[in-house]
Length: 435
Ligand code: UGA
Image (tube, rainbow, N blue to C red):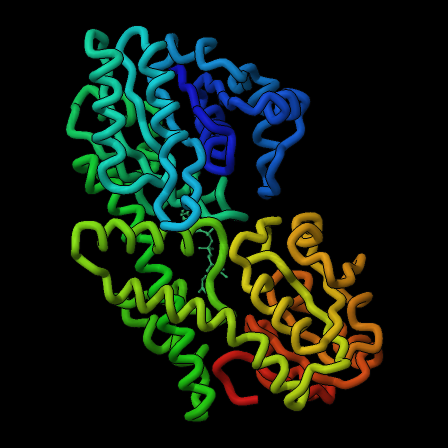
């Protein structure tokens, strides 16, 4: 099959590369000429494990190419994916859909032969219907269908998520479109991945409801973690104990400094706005968002408390800046709340992150960036682990202790085992457990 993917952001690039790996001929299109030039030269603009090799392999095989012009491929395509950005609009939290609609207009003018136009960007319920209207207005005489095919890719694990999804959701009732999409995802369906065909609106809502539910799980366990600290319980045991009930499930119950990233914060807000507009407020999602905002803000206080109540003149070693490991993404990372609050309280900070420092330097210019984890610790009064990169899981605690001025470890991801830091003389503070 021939496929065009419009937008070479995270979703577009990963999806395009993976469809080409399935054997389809894919053209990824972006209006940003510099980006396309870089991609043609083999340079991948995002950090995603395995993506470089996947792109290189498929470009070499002649199945994947890049262009700035939709006209090069849309006419020949069986399926065109819209995977452009939908940033939060300043002020009102609504998703900005202008790029989606512009893409739909441009595609409409270029359609030739039966084509399925599929939204992959996360778009509010009703956007697919609007895309359908644009196509009717501009390409009423041509053969096409519109579908919604939301993605459920996690940054850092996106290729694996694409290749081994829990399910594929497709919003279209057209049997002709369903046949095209079945063919597109054929390798997955041979492996018996469940596919669900729904109404356009249902597919759009499934994406938001899934992210809101996952965010709710996180805010829930974070509040339980606070309770554990007061009551002498241990949140990891509580999470496991409730998660073994299949109705609850064990995943996404890791307590931490609050969720960040480009999806949960943006999607929960967009869903709240949609619900407000139709006068059906979502109280649980609202509470999830409020609890998460509060949580991110409260993390600096936790660190200050571990320092004995004041951060004035104290030097903090900070490991991890990105919102989670295996990404260079700093969007809505808890570090963006923690660092300014510590600086305001009079601390100095030395930090290290394996992939996030280039971006972090722009957002948090007032701190010292180090070349490795141990370099942050020199004469620091406290060590704080903020992101659970694997390389922070097995620090040489004797070496850490000899570098620090005081052996205090605040582990906001609970990556150290019970008693281990204490055995090395550390005062240890995890999340939701006895210290
Ligand atoms: C999330 C979803 O997991 C994907 O299914 C979805 O496709 C994607 O959003 C999207 O909408 O595009 P992502 O934001 O990449 O993926 O990252 P996650 O691994 O879900 O983590 C999100 C945040 O939750 C991170 O800050 C992470 O540290 C936090 N988290 C996650 C916890 O605090 N505890 C957990 O148990 C799990």
